[in-house]
Image 1 (cartoon, rainbow, N blue to C red):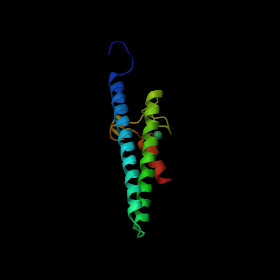
Image 2 (image 1 turned 120 degrees about the vertical axis):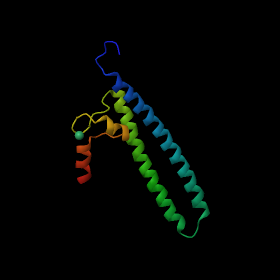
Image 3 (image 1 turned 90 degrees about the vertical axis):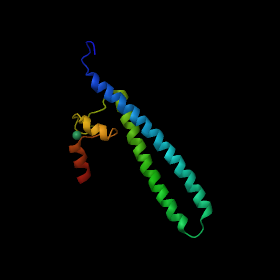
Image 4 (image 1 turned 30 degrees about the horizontal axis):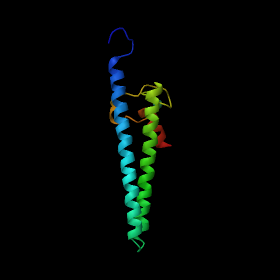
Length: 118
Ligand SMILES: [Zn+2]
């Protein structure tokens, strides 16, 4: 409000996105810790070869969670440095509707499509 040239709605949306991303990171960390704890329990219990598969699945999930965590952390960094909401590839503004669904996304729809084709 007042005389600021920056739209208040954007700032509020960014603050909301930041809160959401922080929460996402907390949840990710919790689930990672939980899975690692589960994995170590499983490994000591199972001796018929089934445990190895379980362990691989857990490792894969952990990998995925770690990647997601990195993406989320990068988004928070962009919020703090004021570049959040812009595509890191082409520099275009990422539509608010897209950020609402994927608050951590670093790229616009077009660049995402390009990446997925590559
Ligand atoms: Zn782009």
